[in-house]
Image (cartoon, rainbow, N blue to C red):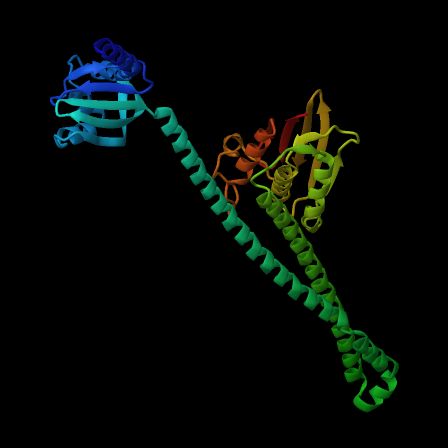
Length: 407
């Protein structure tokens, strides 16, 4: 019988010694009676980092988990569980570098002078859970931003549609305005000039005819000018709606943006169509040299359109409306496995100091600029494994933008 008990004790001792959880037996004073292999491994870095040489677990716990030490000391003498799951976090310093660790403690009192402290390293699990919580939080923040942006786009879209409706009504009203009656009245007075002269005199007759002709011509010119302005405004509204559509497309697909085979020639064509009203209004000559048969690039069409639109818009705005020379040149060429888009303009240009800050987030040379356009462009292009650069020979000498994207 005694032999069987000895064998049972040996088995239990071996099980505890090689358990996957650290186990320490201590007395009521905290003196370590026994440590299994896992406990020795877990306590070793703590002892080294804190230069402990004693044999008391309370001293160690006071450093890494003081609440555990306090609960053990203040526990009743009766046997039972003192702690079931008590996570504790602490830092260890090695060579001036701090390492964050996280342990979980379980404490059971077998009897007054025999306390079993179980503990394990849960750092990896803790960090993984923290990362998941942070990811969920970041995702919620991003989702909130997208929802706000979507609402803003919706409100802008409604305002633009309303504005467009009023312009359309004004245009229809102008089209229904009939100037023929005024012309006919002026014609009637002209044909009846002799009769009218006998009644009111030559001077008054000529004055009335001249006034009617002037009013008719002035009304026609005003109507043409208003009609032209309304058409330009409707073009601008169409341009705004196209941009809003691009932004909505981006927002709708922000969770799963995928790069697909994209035609750079098609992107340039669509961007030019969207900016045509602005280009014609400023009488800018645009030269496009994009050869057929260019290879496709793998990219996000929406974001690349944002880049090309931003670059073209900057070139348009950089050209003085009263300048003698107003031109923009777009050229695309293939150099080995790199597709190169160059946009040159005859705009205001810039000096070397300005050139160094163009891509800095928040920097702008425009009175109403945000300083985000070119910074975002660089982020987008670099995300497509490409580069973007803007250069100028100085003020009044235009600027050249070069975008390179690997195929």
